[in-house]
Image (cartoon, rainbow, N blue to C red):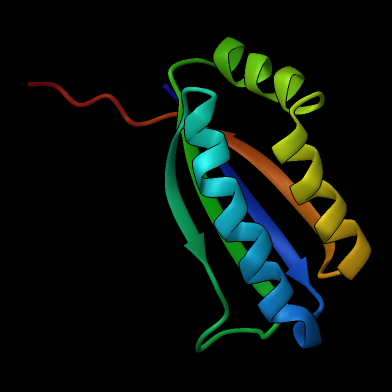
Length: 103
């Protein structure tokens, strides 16, 4: 399993727009076989920071999702909404694997 951790730098005045964007992506990740662990929005932290985590069985499965999302109309709509509203200033993706523990 591979988990993608995405750290967003937001436009703080566009938080409602980002929330709409985030709500759109949860089912889209799941549509392509991933498990979405949720978005985490600013609270007692910098007002321009949000993160999300989602997992796929493998990095290859994630790459299939990324490729298919480029031609999926719902994904394209979400991408355009973020672009049009400028709710995201930048984002960084990190790929993590779970720690295997002995049974």
